[in-house]
Length: 321
Image (cartoon, one colour):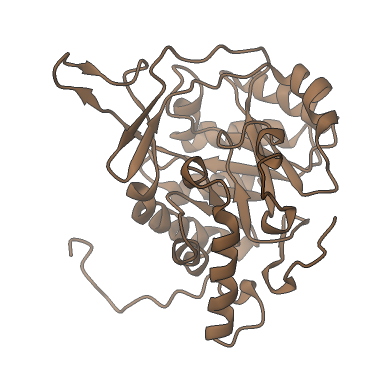
């Protein structure tokens, strides 16, 4: 990998992969990678890894319009996993990517356990660096949420995918569930190598004049700064389970600054996902990394890994505030 000019203090080893920085570009926000890497000013030195768009076995047209709606401090989206299908991605898109530039992570989605297995098989026989299992998509009518909110089903999907690939598996956890820590524990037992915490929250926005939802799918996934406090908490809850097993976490949800990224790292994340912020500032990664370097200087730290899991909780406090 070309790391000329990179800062070794920001490098991360994640599930056996070397990231140039802790920052990961999230699935659905940069297409299949080539859309983002050709943006003027892009530098692979600022990116740890790129998660490709969610991919199913067969092509999907996605949900009806409207698919995106801006909300206060956030964004609702219900794309519906529009994609050309796993064979097309593997045969036509992956050969166009420069795997010497950064790490590329496939995002596997499905409506059945069997579909997850088949898509994982296809990516296992490809140059992809790792596989993210999307068991928590809130804007498709089958699969997704049903798998992600049930610890037994989550573990079943992970176990099935684990059986057909030797590549690192990163399980993307849903915040729309009762006990995310228990779900994480079950996924660790099933063989996951890492976690992405969290996916979007379910949300709705209503056109008050027409009295219909703004989103054609009625509901969608809420992302952006509005969800960050929830995402930080969920990251810390998963970290309490994962740290004993050495299972790393990509913390994500509303990251738009170095301060946001540091919250996730302190809460227990080894890497940090950036998504919605890329839509209004495609080159935000450079500023986030600069802020991380400044933080290391300010606190006389040698490496960003020293920040991970460094949260010192207060004594016994009421959960009700």
